[in-house]
Length: 315
Image 1 (cartoon, rainbow, N blue to C red):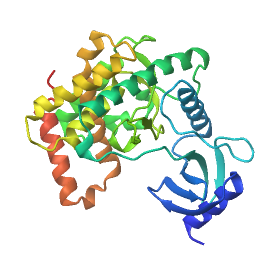
Image 2: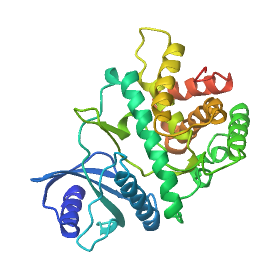
Image 3: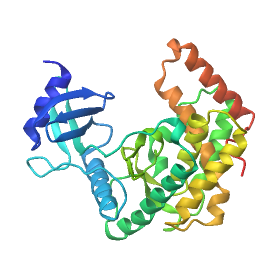
Image 4: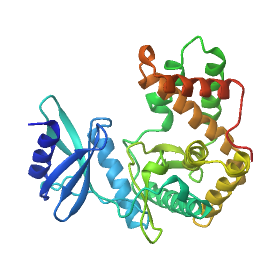
C-alpha cells in the first residue's frame, strides 16, 4: 500500500467521509476527493497538537465573524485535530472542506482584487482583536520565537554585511512598542497561493499554518512583497506598480480596520523583514552543496539587493 493509499484509509477511518481518491499537493497537504465534494488534509507535525487545535479555534472564530476561511471537519471522535498512524511515524492531521473558487492567474491580480484582499485582511485583524479578548492564546507564539526568524543561525558568517542588516531589522522590529491595536494574531503568509477567489469575487484565505503573533502590518507587507516579486509582468514602471498595489491594499484595509500612520510609515521595514526571511529560508532548506543554476541566481539576486540596500517599496 502506498503512502497516499494509507492516508486515504486512515482518513476514512477517522472522519465521517468516504474518500475515493487522495493525491499529494505537497509533502504535507493532500487533496481528497469524495462523492460529496473535495477536501484538503493537512498531515504534519510542523506544529504541536495544542498549537494546531488553537489555530483551528482561531480560524473557526474568524469564519463566524465573516472572514473567508475554510471550515475544519470534526473527526468521528469530535476532534478537529487527529492523530494518524503511518508506516514510519505518527502524524497530526486536520481535514478541511475545500474553499470555493480557484487561485487567480497572475494577469487577474489587479488593483480591484488587491483592494478586496485588503478588505479581507482588515476584517481578519478586526476579528483577531475580538478573538484575543475572549480567547487568550496559550500556544501560538510570537513571531520572534520561531526558529525561521533566527536569521543569524542560518545566514553564513562570511556574509557579514547581510548579517548586520538582518540583526538590525530584527532588533528594530522586536523593540517597536506593542499595543492591542498594532499587534496580535494574524495569518502570517498571505499571498497568491493562500488566497482563493470564487466567481463572485468572494475571497477565502487558506493555510493558516504560519499564523503567529506579530505586528498587524506584517500581514500587509507579505502580499505587497509577493505582488511585486511575483505578479509584475512589465508594461510600466515597477516603482509605480508597487505604489499602486500598496495604495489598493491599504485603501481596502482601512475600509474594515484602522491603521495608524505610524505603522504605515514602517511598512518598508516590514517588507525588508519579509525579504530577509525569504533569504534565510534559502539557507535553511536548500542544499548548499547541490544548488541549481536557478537557485544560485536567486540567491545572488537577493545578496546584491540586500547588501546594496535596495528598497522593495518606495512610498
